[in-house]
Image 1 (cartoon, rainbow, N blue to C red):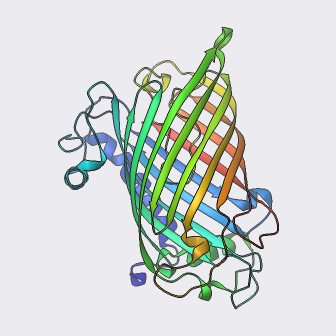
Image 2: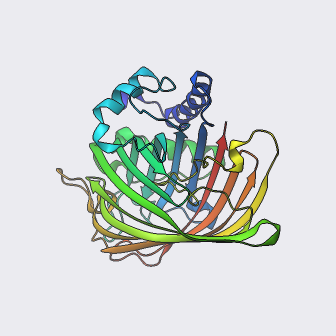
Image 3: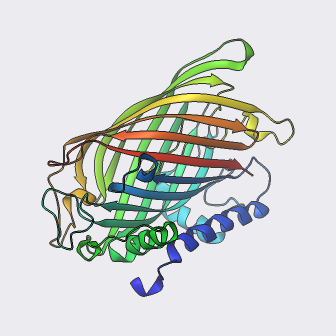
Length: 351
């Protein structure tokens, strides 16, 4: 599989995937807009370069559909995939249904990046490249997500080459220990997550607040965990989506509702809000800490509970939504000296 890649292919492939998503807009009828999301996370926003050091994800959210298996807006290969995955989705006529296709890459490194051998009590080098398909069912007050991701962890994920490409562009030193990264292993992850808008208040001038709670479960050799949390938002003209998206399975929340301002191509609507979000996980397995499933590899002793606390702002302009968050992640493994910080940027556009 590694022969299929060149050092520059991963960024290029993600860019091509983005353009393909845009091109598919022309094949659809007009039950609503396609929504394209671009996510980028990196700890250089906090002037570090270790642990969870880089993540990128592109996703495409379909217009409303009444049939995942027969909708002519979907390419034939996607309709066929939906037929095989029919146990993962429903067609309740009283709710909004959207299909999500995504591709992404994650990168992890230890603190000591000059060592050529594995460093005790420091997480191993790891890269993860994946593609996913998800089914969203939503109303004004709820969003249910069922997602299946297939990918690979190891050298074929090309995280080493991606990091070198970025470091060379920015004039940074390259890392010495990538020969010790987790070995190639195909991955499967199945995730279910439900989100509920538990409260919403709007005052004069479009100023308002809401709170969105979520719970979920993930099963697979990449990650097996139970997660829960919520997001509080306050500001002007809050979007009718389900919060701020992140580079994680089940993280796409940005499909506009049937009556939302991003559906309307005429009048431009502006909004600005701040948010505070928490996602806590009870972790049974994390390959990036536990190591390979069936082969010997570097590993560390993981913590059984981890949480991400994010604070940030979002700006809405017509069909565009732009968000930035600073994320604090609690210690993930024994020996980790301090919590980890990274920045997260997301850009969403309803075509």
